[in-house]
Length: 88
Image 1: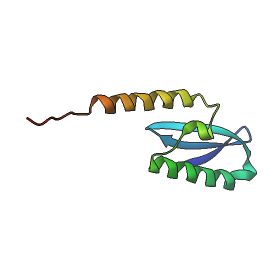
Image 2 (image 1 turned 180 degrees about the vertical axis):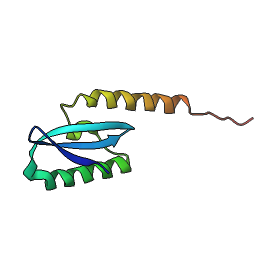
Image 3 (image 1 turned 60 degrees about the vertical axis):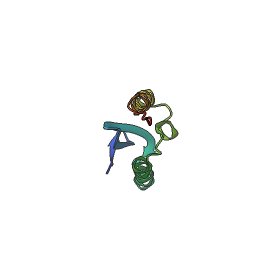
Image 4 (image 1 turned 180 degrees about the horizontal axis):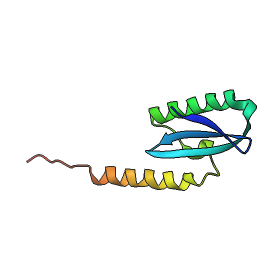
C-alpha cells in the first residue's frame, strides 16, 4: 500500500512500481488528501492488473524514462528466453 506525505505544502504520492520506490509530488494541497488517496488506489490496482502506465499519471516525471527502459529490457529478456521446440 502506498502512502501520502506532505512536502512544501503539497501532497506527495509514495508507492512502489517495478521494485522501485516512486515519490511524486502533486500540485494538490493538504485539503485534497482524499482525492489523492483515491488516485493512489487506482494506481495500485492498475499495477496489480499489469496495465499501469507511468506517464499517464506523471507525464513530466524523471522516472518515465527509467520505466520505459525497464519495460524494454523486460521485453528483450522475455523474447530472448523463449525456447523454440521442434518435432523430429
